[in-house]
Length: 473
Image 1: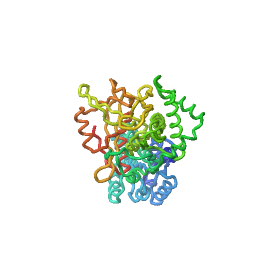
Image 2 (image 1 turned 30 degrees about the vertical axis):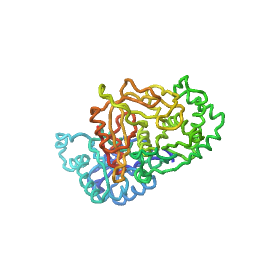
Image 3 (image 1 turned 180 degrees about the vertical axis):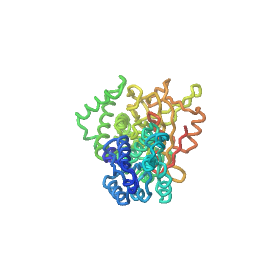
Image 4 (image 1 turned 90 degrees about the horizontal axis):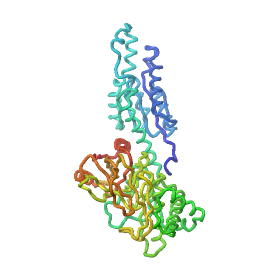
């Protein structure tokens, strides 16, 4: 299924102790008001609230509600002290984020102590005693083997809410990965041992479905492209690319036909990402097809179907993660080190994420694709200047996956104008430290680059997926 084909939902419930309500009039209504604030701040129809849970029976009802609505994550708002027996049944086996949010930074002690009625004073305290229940809940979750995350602050705490929304975003992305079909077209680039990976591990770690594709299927689609489709695709090329005058019309037409075929393949197979590499025999139609995929694959990548060349399956997933976070995710590798300016040039031939380009990407003709058969049109682009994040999906020596990230800046300056995606990046570490630190983690030589600093969100995603996370800088 392509991204967005399933509705994402998050569960929410507050907790309380039924015994309190008759003892402290107005307390339940006050706590329900706080829960309403949490619900409003989480936002969207995607949040399913089970209300204030104060008995085991209500906890069981909450669990049933979350199952019916196919919730992907549960936010537990600790409204006041509550028995852990009313918490455990509600969460099931869903990821849990415990919200330890006081209504204010502190109790007004002078006002509190002037109330004169110890009953009222206790009721007021109970509206502030979120932290009282948190260790109990944590203890039970630990003993039950339920992974949980915790956010501590106040209801109006901007830092806490940034953290909470980060968990919501990460859960969105996890759900998107689980509903994605990853197409694998062709085979690995022969000899790139770092690129080889275990598709089963991809499916297990991300919930992604793997679709192995035939070049003949793309060939058949290409033969059925209509003149109207070709015309519209060439118009799209003109809108999305700066088509240089030296681009031969027959090359534009060839790339447009292949782009139309790729659109048909993606739609027919309901793909959410694609990894490809093929060579074909010299002079064959298969070679012609594979040499003309770059513009079409770049358009797909910008339309949230990231395409990774050299059949780099791991990097297709890294690109998908970045794109699902709204950061883009362009296929990249280390090009060169500039010790004078302390920047690293990263780029790649083939498709780029043109939606995050600095300016309009250029469509250039190349007489040779370095290390690959054929010739044709290529995309030259620069990733938008400003904050960026790098992500690599790494397969470790044990066969498991981990997420490797770094944050830096895309900076202006001269690039290699060779018809590839190519940008200059500066990191908090110097060039030597960064390359050594990144390489030490054992990634393949590819990575995905997206705009913005989103490493904290990637860390949360790794937690939800039970994957190791490493941030170099």
